[in-house]
Length: 348
Ligand SMILES: *[C@@H]1O[C@H](CO)[C@@H](O)[C@H](O)[C@H]1NC(C)=O
Ligand SMILES: *[C@@H]1O[C@H](CO)[C@@H](O)[C@H](O)[C@H]1NC(C)=O
Ligand SMILES: *[C@@H]1O[C@H](CO)[C@@H](O)[C@H](O)[C@H]1NC(C)=O
Image (cartoon, rainbow, N blue to C red):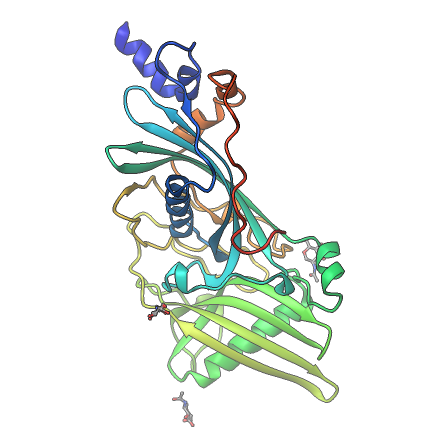
């Protein structure tokens, strides 16, 4: 029976931890700006970035909450809530996060909000549960401090689609070799002055050559994925349109054995990016990577709710079971720690 109780406790981690006081279980208070908290938060954000399938790498902006629970039979669990900001580096970009700049308010910033449960045992960190979502700054807020700043446009906006199509065609024309096809529209804005459209998108090399392509749908992504990230501007001049495009090709990525091959995907269709096989930091144990949910393409950004493929569902289920329970244990008489912590960039 004892082992059964232990198993139940493992399955309902948080329920067990809210056991009556005097059992030696409970939580430890930490300040949000404590170096220990920051270390775990940075690791959590790193984990997030390594499991992003779409959109942009995230930078830690603020730690909102932290609690550290002792866990049976061993270890401690950090329960963290953090705010992140979108950077200019795409999720597939191998550039280290420290070299990625945070997207400014004037570019219509996007904020991420994540909950993490991270187990620490003998110096090893294991992510048990993660849940994130992200939201762009509100239009009113952007308008308030910057009336002329371009807002995020929908991915299926006519100008955006035309910009991406024209830019990709121009890129393929300049590039006498491999035909690249669209994988994802990542971000787009219609600029009022000069009248133009900005688009950032992901492309991937196919088995077609650019010169021969008749039907792009028949071109398949290579097994050794080669992705690229493009920034394009379409100027809407009186005399016509003028496109400029710059693409950065990333190193090839071998196809992970269990990943779904990214399917042919004309603009406007749903696109699922195969999980980048980037390894986790040595200290993090990673669960299986799931394919993100497909959504209508009238979005203006890739919500972390779907773009981020978190860990095993068993573990996240135990996370859900804890709702409301921990606060009952040991909270009385403890001075609240300094939370939320400092803002690293700006507040949305
Ligand atoms: C990142 O930035 C550092 C310092 O500025 C620089 O030395 C390094 O080459 C950069 N790395 C990349 C991949 O850009
Ligand atoms: C592509 O081919 C054209 C004509 O053959 C040539 O002028 C151009 O320089 C080539 N571009 C590249 C990037 O090789
Ligand atoms: C974008 O998609 C939404 C939802 O599918 C649709 O209602 C809207 O008309 C589309 N916009 C354009 C410009 O195609």
